Amino acid sequence: MITLTINGVFYDQAPGVMDTDILMSFTRTFVLMPVEAKLGILNKAIKYQIVNEQLSIYNPTSQQFKNSFKYFKSECQGDNDAVTVSDKEALLIMLQEVTKLKPLWCIRFLEDAKWNFKKSLLIFLSFCDNKKIPETAFN
Image 1 (cartoon, rainbow, N blue to C red):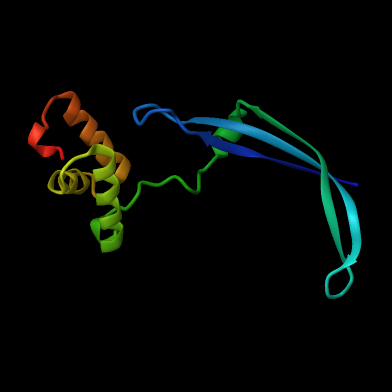
Image 2 (image 1 turned 60 degrees about the vertical axis):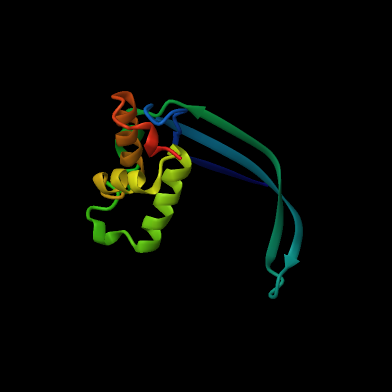
């Protein structure tokens, strides 16, 4: 029998674009039992089956919060050259689908946000709130 425990942190996605994601901590434990032995080419592999598991989700400790994602946090694309033409086309299509804007307006928002999709959505929302987008801009 083997007991395997994994723990870490994850972001629980916010329901809306303007809301912030919530950092959560988890522990997941598996209990494994050997089912078959002497498998594989060298007859040394063992097949296991999960016979029990437990998942716990809770608020992270201050140390987990401090250390979480510190190597992965970065502003997307520092300059326009890092974004390829195919990436720009994909971002344009995604923004059009989400906002129902004409391509020219989507390009404007994406360029203002340096091709950062999340920032372009925030700019779009601020324009909507201030009623700066004419009806003719929509499809």
